[in-house]
Length: 91
Image (cartoon, rainbow, N blue to C red; front, side):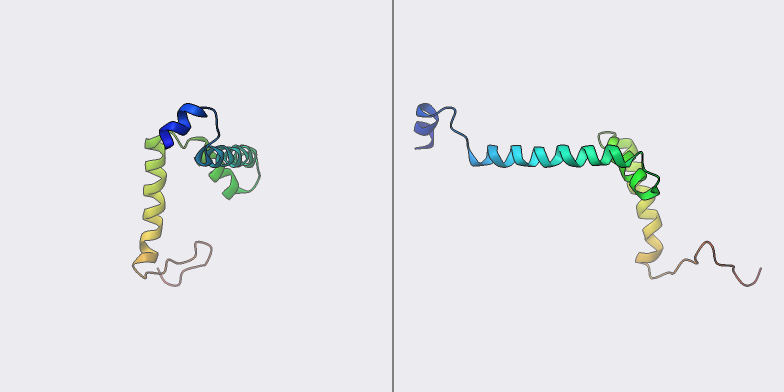
């Protein structure tokens, strides 16, 4: 039956096509916001903007992922890192 529909109505929109176009529209808005945020004075937004701008650069993303995983490792093991601005007692 689907084949018959395709033959009789070749340009009839399919639900998946509509969903795809809706997602692409939302993606375009997100990409635009990320580009704008990379010019921001907020450090986190700038970092996210740079990561998003290079999302096709696999070696770059791999490095970012490894760095984040290394930073999260002490937390995963239950080790609390001292706050960098707090003074340590002792040598």
